[in-house]
Length: 186
Image (cartoon, rainbow, N blue to C red; front, side):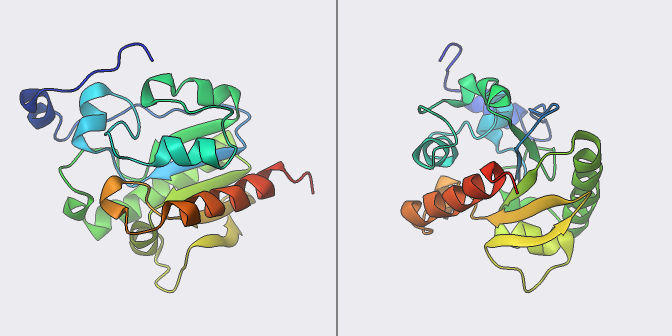
């Protein structure tokens, strides 16, 4: 966990509008797609970095990783066939600052990435962002119809601490279903 640090208030303020590089490459089983980076993540340049975000704990609890990783260990995910991107790449104080038009542009960009990198599955982390970006008003949590070159498309709860009303055990169960689907050779 080298490099782990708490950004200063000035660093957080300066992170508005910046981005976090994609963690993506060939041979992905799953490409996780967040809504957009928060200020903490943008300031430290690592995905899901804010303390209280449940992404890393849920990955470990669901068996996607053998141990609990930190955002500073994120490069290890590529060896496990896991990547991370965002629908909108600019950091904001809150995902509520993102417009529907930005989400729609992000959905088109995600489809291009999926065609290029060909992950087995894409897991969108955030139901409301998925509904707005993909024009699927009636979508619910779970697997969606296949899209973008045959990749499985999943919508999962946002793991942000702000979304903690969604029980951790249910988040882990959804990730377990996704893991089973991408590990199934059929």
